[in-house]
Length: 159
Image (tube, rainbow, N blue to C red):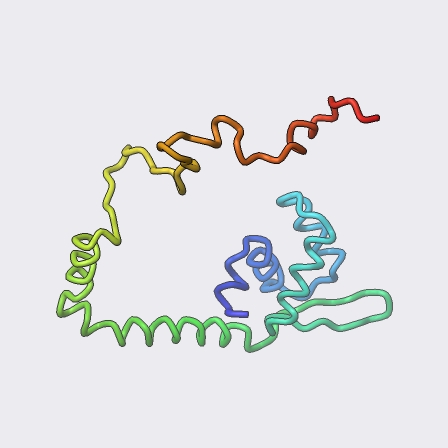
């Protein structure tokens, strides 16, 4: 999992912040997050699993307790993710300097692939209603619906 995806979740980011102070038991972590944001035990457990799989934390078993702490190199994972973005930014520098971005966008607008809207303009529906012959809106008439939907409320008399 990409380091930004790991830290992109508020709960995981908060777990990392707590673990940056020092190692904690899973119970302590669950209590802290429950007090701060009403996060449940199972959610904390799942997020700790993601942190463990991604290589951010290490878990040590001490009898019935599980102690979690950040790996020494966890920041290196974040830095590597940032370096990926930096490389992509650097590779696009020549296009940005030449103004290729605006030219490409202008061409997409002219072709109709992109439609610019003013703030407050109504958002068009994702798809139009089903049109039948002569342009009639069949979905408004109930055509094409299953007969089961009429009985969905349980009001039909079943014998």
